[in-house]
Image 1 (spheres, rainbow, N blue to C red):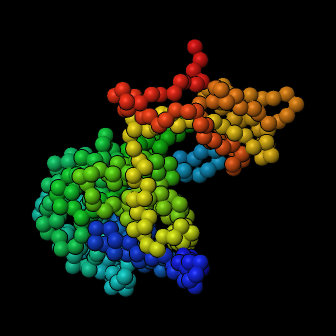
Image 2: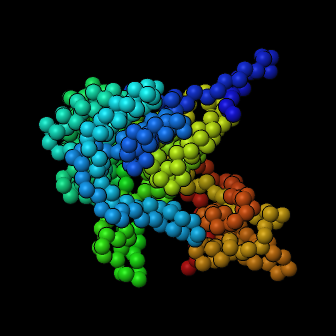
Image 3: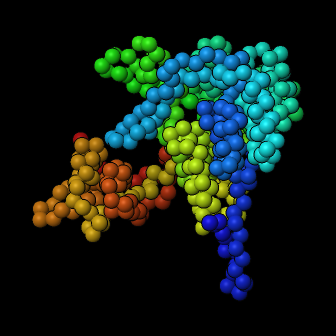
Amino acid sequence: MSATIDLGGPTLKAKKVTPDLTSNTGGIISPNPFWLASAPPANSGDQVKRAFDAGWGGAVWKTLGQPIQNVSSRFGGLHYRGQRAIGFNNIELITDRPLETNFREIAEVKRLYPKHAVIVSLMVETEAEWREMILRSIDTGADGLELNFGCPHGMCERGMGSAVGQEPKVLEMITSWAVKYSTIPVLVKLTPNIDDIVPAGLAARAGGGHGVSLINTIKSIIGVDLDRMVPEPRVNGLSTNGGYCGAAVKPIALHMLAALAREPGFGLPISGIGGITNWRDAAEFLALGASSVQVCTEVMLRGYRIVEDMIEGLSNFMAERGMAKLDDLIGRAVPAYSEWGDLDMNYETVAKIDADKCIGCHLCVVACDDGAHQCIHAQAGTHVPTVDESECVGCNLCQIVCPVPDCITMVQVQNGYPPATWNEHTAGTGTLRPKKGVHY
C-alpha cells in the first residue's frame, strides 16, 4: 500500500501525494535510495536481477580487479544474549569470477533494468589498470563507478583498499586518475580505519570525485574459539583480522557520515553504509546527510525481500511528516550535531517513573546504584522505586535499562539558570548551575 501525504487545508479538498523516493547521489539516479553494497549479494548478474525484482533501487557490483583466490572459511558472527550476528566479520576479498563474465553480466543487467542504478566497484594498482577498468566499465552502460579505498584485509597488504584510504595524498591522486578517464560519476569509498574521516573526504573532493560512500568495514577480530585457541573465522588452524560490519557498526558509521556532512569545505553527496537493517536506520542515515544507503550484511542474513519493508516504512515515515521528496529529509539532523563544548550545560533533566507501568524489576535501581549516581531506591511496601531528584543528574541510564517502553522518562527541570555552554563558561560569558550527584 502506498503511503500518502495529505496536502489539503481547512478550506481545500485534501490531495493525496505519494512521497517521491527518487535518489540522486552525485549524478547517479535510482528509483529509491536503497542500494546493494559491493559485496556477496551483488556478486553476479542473476543476484542483482533478483534484487531489482524485489525492489532494490541500485546495486554496487562486487569489486572488480585482478580476480583472486578466496579462503575457506571466511565469515564470522558476533552473537549476544540470544541474538544471532549482531556483528559480522569477513576475510573475503574482491571478485573471484572472470572479468569478462562480470562485465558481460553488468551490461545485461543494465540493459534489462535501465531505470535502476548499476555502479561498478573497482580496485587495481597502476594508472594504466585504472584506465582500462574504467573504460571497460563505461562500455557496459553502468551509471557510475565506486573506487574501493576501504577494504581492510588482504588487498591492503598489496597496496590497495584501505592502504589508499588511509593516505589522503594517494587517495586524491588515484581519484584524479579515475575522474580523468571516466565519463560517468565517480564515488570514492572511504575506510573507517582512520583517526579522522574528514581529510580523506576532502581528498576525494580535491581529486574531483562526484561523491563518497562510507563506511567500509572496520579492521577486527570477531572472537576466539576457546576450545581450539584460534581466532575466528578459522582457516586450517589459523586466522587473521577481517572487516567488521552489521548492525553493531551503525553508530560508528553515523558519526563518520555526520562529520563529513557538516564539514563546511566538503559538500559532496554521500552514500551511507554501515549497520542498516531497516527503514528507520536508513532514515537516520538520510537525516545525517546521506542521499542513498547501501546494505550488505542484513541482506546476507535475511535476503533481498527486506527492501519491501524498507520502502514501505520510509514512505510512511515521510508521509506522516509531510515530506514529499528525499531532499526534505536529507541532512535535516545535521545542524543539531555539535561539539561538546557548545552544549547547554544548564539544561537539566530528572528521571520520572510511571508507577502504572512499572513491573518492579528494579533493573534501574541496580544500574543507578552500581553504574551511575545512587539516586534511585527501593521503597518498602511497593514494587515501584523512588527517584531522589536532588541527586539525579539526568544521565538516563535507568531509562536505557528499563524493559518497559515509556515507563521511565526524562523530564526537564526549570532551575532558573539561563543557557550556558562550556565554551561560554571558559570565556567568562556564561554561568554554570551547581553540580548535583557528586559524592566525596
